[in-house]
Amino acid sequence: ILQAMSQDYDCIVIGAGVHGSFTAYNLAKKNKKTILLEQFVLPHSRGSSHGQTRVIRKAYDRDYYTQMMEECYQLWSQLEKEANVKLYRRTGLLVMGPERGLAYPAIKSTLERNKLPIVTLQREEFSQHIPNVNLSQGHGALVDMTAGVLYADRTLRTVQVRFQKLGGVIQDGLKVIDITLTGPWANTLLSHTGLQLPLQVLKINVCYWKEKVPGFYNVQNRFPCFIQLESEEAKHDIYGLPSNEYPGLMKICYHSGPETDPDERDRQTDRGDIDILQRYITSCFPGLVPIPAIVESCMYTVTPDSHFVLDHHPTHPNIVIGAGFSGHGFKFGPIVGKLLCELSQGEVPSYDLSPFRIRRFQALSKSAL
Ligand SMILES: Cc1cc2nc3c(=O)[nH]c(=O)nc-3n(C[C@H](O)[C@H](O)[C@H](O)COP(=O)(O)OP(=O)(O)OC[C@H]3O[C@@H](n4cnc5c(N)ncnc54)[C@H](O)[C@@H]3O)c2cc1C
Ligand SMILES: O=C(O)[C@@H]1CCCCN1
Image (cartoon, rainbow, N blue to C red; front, side, top):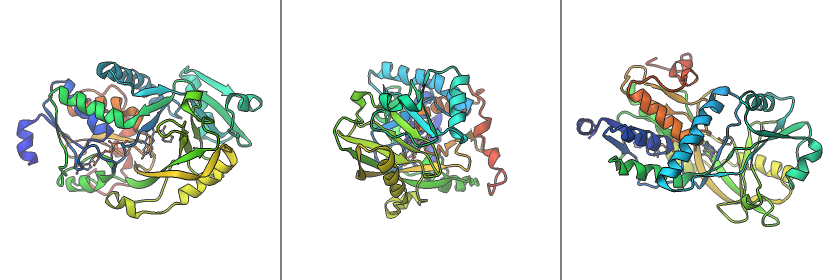
């Protein structure tokens, strides 16, 4: 089928998650005849891009992510205008973490170096600004003022419709079994092209927690998103979004989870991450009932260094790979779409992509490098 398609289309994009959808949309904007293939019938909730909300932020510990987000915010806003929909809601992002650790000082200095609007909260004034949250001993707190919430499902719908309006074709319910790219299935599919990337698929329990007093942590009361950076109590970050999509429920998740086969996600029932969240909520979010009211599932595809893969296939340069978004890729959708489109067209990419090259895994990858 693909061979027949390759005669009819300039570009074939495999996977209609956030990144495939934005890539297809960018290609169509450049007048490339493009088909977007998706194994499941759309919309679906079996990959990494479903659900109502995601965090958008510039608070990162690396300049290159922060700087890519500068342009990315503009692209989000352009899409909102073009499609006349609201995709972003500003809430701010509270970042908390050990002041003497690595991550918190690195994020703070990246934000300062890039002259971004932040407010640093002193311990004495913390509860006046952020009521109903306990700041752990030895932790600092700052607010990334331009951060907020992205409406994820709505984004996918919007981008896919824009793509179709530009003449793009979506074929869902069609699994490519020969060559492949994005999402948790990236490795199975790429192996057909002789490439094995060191990607690990994790199941994430997406937990919603009930407010003891409705409104405590509500978006309308200007409660922000937050990230609690890794500490002795929790080896990975914990993050949350104010109650919004489900009235009276706040979404708080652990930034890691048990390994899973993407086709057997629901058979993975490990809840160790939920235990960690319960302990954290009991000590730091006293206004929430420390038992999850709703648990949904999602997957991360993680690389060993948590940085994305944005590159040409090492031996088939006409294949461009976007994968391994490591649980923080959604916000970059518009810029990743632009970059993958540039790579596929042989253009010089708008950003230095060296942190995202496949070559960095040389010692870890099995073949074709
Ligand atoms: C719980 C959770 C919370 C997150 N929070 C944030 C956040 O707050 N902020 C943020 O920026 N990011 C966040 N992320 C990360 C972000 O959602 C992901 O990085 C992003 O959605 C990955 O998109 P993708 O397009 O690479 O993968 P996917 O969404 O999995 O898309 C890949 C698609 O390809 C399809 N596919 C795969 N193989 C084939 C094939 N052979 N043939 C046809 N189709 C195929 C799949 O079915 C799938 O639809 C979060 C992720 C999760 C799970
Ligand atoms: O990308 C983000 O912003 C969220 C919160 C922090 C952990 C990763 N996922």
